[in-house]
Length: 380
Image (cartoon, rainbow, N blue to C red; front, side, top):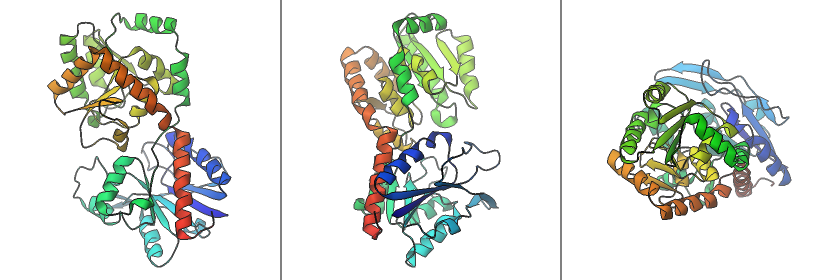
């Protein structure tokens, strides 16, 4: 039986459901999984959760202060001796990666990367960590790419296309999906009354209140929409260091409704009530929420989006406008006034939703592991 080890710095809560699904999928294919993970840096977020499985090994990460940041040492070499493949995060701070790649060059255990290809939010793309990341991008046997966005980066670097698996990054959305399906007309009517909303033109923001989300731009959009669409209302979900901007706007304008952080099924009624998802800043897995709820997402063509931006197909299941206030507002107004476009994008969401699931992600990952093991000659 072949054995694959995945090394993670931490296991954040949204990754917890993925690993048991992957372990089951691999077991059916005669492949053993081992997951090695540690703890977050003191005071860091997200925090690591426990994986209570025999195939999961928790280690004690060591964070080392170095010029320009922190390096990470993961003491796990003794746990890798019987592995046929080691999958690591593409992180320049992870010292274990350099050692594994050096041993690989000497004929040691094959190594694969799991990541985005580049740090899209790097303050300086030409910084030393980013240059190191680019130099090592091809020093592995296989790539588990988050999305097609990563494939484009790997193609430019010259990495062989037949050694890439597109994982289609996803999280567990069963509770959110069940919440969407269980909402009744009376429940939506009650929410309307609670919020004081009478009209139909309702926009929704759902995400963190942090600079990459362009909260100031979002509020400008809302004010411009209200001037053009008298019954426009905006619901805002989330928390973060810039949430005071939403709180102040809601206190001053009764058509803006800041409801704070909501999770899983809690978010469902607000999605169901809304006609459009206003996400002009960086987009990540909220795109999948958009598909499940059949509420099209409107964003802008920022270069700093998460890899999941490739899930959004312009004017098919969502909309990508220029980074321009007038252009974005015009696109939203056109959509809200066009039943034909609303139907097309909603149907696009409905078609996209079944593709981006945790089950599919586990299956894609297992397919890639199986193919890689065959390539390197391990039993699978």
